[in-house]
Length: 292
Image (cartoon, rainbow, N blue to C red; front, side, top):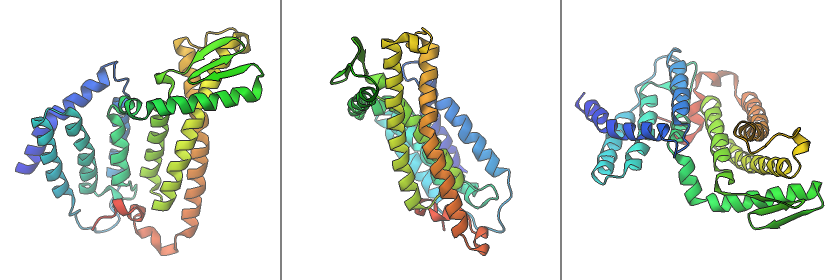
């Protein structure tokens, strides 16, 4: 009880900072939506019965204690992001305590915790770390796509010249947001389907390639709309609503191969499972999610 009370008290400040990032437009965070999705999945699994008599998770309480200590160190050093990141460990530990991995509607505690990590302001972190590399990669890919359809295309770094119109692939167009949204969808799917480790690694590669290609397609469509507005009925593709619609459309295209991969993977896993294996939670197939 004392440990739980201390953990809750230490979590107040990091949780408050996290909520602030959701409300601050500078962070452009979808953290609130992510948290709602995680909570809904948590309750969906918790509402289902356990698969027989299962022992309590032994690692949950030590994880909560370690998380509280790290959070205390983060508060003493005034580094908010450290305390916020420990909330991910808390979600993992709480999922273990609730034994979500051995319920009828089983969820992987590890994948669920990873999905909750997307409630952090990761977009700014990605832009500051690998954003410039993504920016150049997206510009080169979009230039290649446009070059296959148009003759008058020139590329100068992150600038694309299409039929005399100049298109600049700035940092917000680097694809960080597309990458994070695609990765979120992938982790949520893994939390439910609980793939084997090698399949999860393959899926991560598919997810990464799909997200990058989707952003290249988005930039190409925007460039065509800027150079040839008549191709889209004269609309301004840089206007807020149309700009967002094109972005979400490209994201949907990027999710298609990922969804196809997960569907094929689920079918193969089902065929590989022996008749009596269904009593064993599939979460045990991921080493990081296996608990004693």
